[in-house]
Amino acid sequence: MQIIFYERHSMKLKQIIQRFSCVILLSVISLNAEITQPNQSELEKFKTTPTYQVLKEQENTYTHKEVMGEIEQSEKKALNNKFDISSIKVEEDEKNKELINSLNNVKFDEVMKNVKLVGDEVINAKVDEFMLDHKMKEELYKREDYFTIFYFISKSISINAIERFINDYKKLKEKNKNVNAKLILRGYPTFYGERTVGKIDSKTWFKKESIKSKFGTFTINDDGVWEYKVNKGVDTNLLPKKSIFNDTISYEDYKTKQKHKLEVELIVEEKVLKVVVKNSPDGMYHYLNDIRAKTELQPEDMEFYVNPWVFKQFNLEKVPAYALSKCKLPFKFKHCEALYLAKGEMNLATFFQILGDKTPSYKKFYFDIIEAK
Image (cartoon, rainbow, N blue to C red; front, top):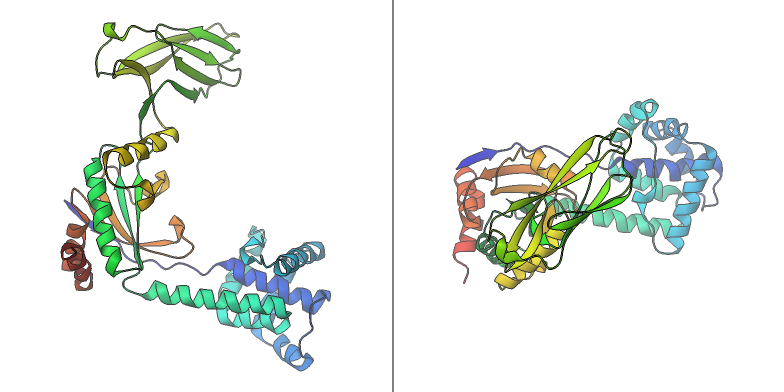
């Protein structure tokens, strides 16, 4: 068993919040947007602060039309009670990098306070709501019992192991409501069906045609997209049982007359000829139905993901593996701090037992699992 401990890494506060405040604030001050005006003495005092100078410089990266357009959109959303700060899009080109770095030094609370200084009642109410939500998330993030467990698997991992993980997670969740877990699949599960599709990415010149092969019909379009569908009425008694074999389709480049071959894999399952389907989202559907049929679990009991980027981030070539991360809300993989990674066959309780040996505070979660009824 290999245990790898990752160091914490900090996540930056979203720059969009700060740039949003710049749009709102400077549009009111400099562009006379139709929003309730602040007290003039407070406004003049604010103009002398370093924050105002940074925001004033940032204003130069927007055109009058862009700012007014964004203000108009934000006002409409506020009136419709659908105000969404993250919807304001800002182009981050090379010339803005220095200004953006300056904005990163502006404190979140100060920026929000300045937005309220010039906002109307609707906007101020939404800013208060946003600040409260932000504060609650920051407090939640600091809690020791707030973390997300990633269980890395592939179709080679037994359904019994998945069932054990989900049941152990439920025991953990009963005593630790802030704990979350996600199952990460290595690619879409393979399944067997009557058809499969693909695309040939090459400089081959195609023409739309259908070719009947020994076991199926191959159809290709002029853009290289193809479909293979199993023929009906094939005598499966003459075919290998429970072993995968190939069907080879030959097609021709209509310009160069060069011959090309494509191979698909077939299998006989319960006396029915089926094609092996790989790298298709349909595989997830079949996989979850298989879990539902073979266990008392429902796929809704756990969030399943297919995300090759996560495997790359953790440098994972083999499964199973466990990871413990701190993830900001709303959940996105790129906003997670990787704290611990353990590779090898083990259950969730053993994972926390190992962590407890490294960091004693995690031993509690081990006992929460093994002592649960």
